[in-house]
Image 1 (cartoon, one colour):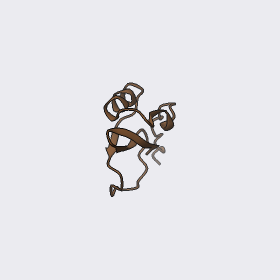
Image 2 (cartoon, helix red, strand yellow; image 1 turned 90 degrees about the vertical axis):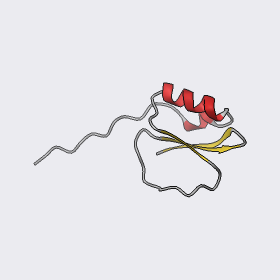
Image 3 (spheres, one colour; image 1 turned 180 degrees about the horizontal axis):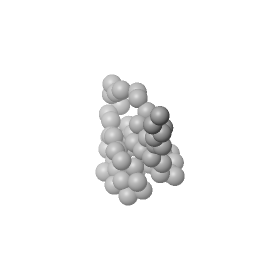
Length: 71
């Protein structure tokens, strides 16, 4: 029987730290801290809800991160 794969570790970083930042700066910072991929979305965007380890999502309003969450 094949071993169960171990998912990659997520960066030890709080998504709340990105709220209020300029979206470009927030995306750069997230990549520096190990998040991959980083997804920037407009308010109310229709997205898939699967959880993806290591992904950081931003809801961007007026060029600033209004909300951030893992997955």
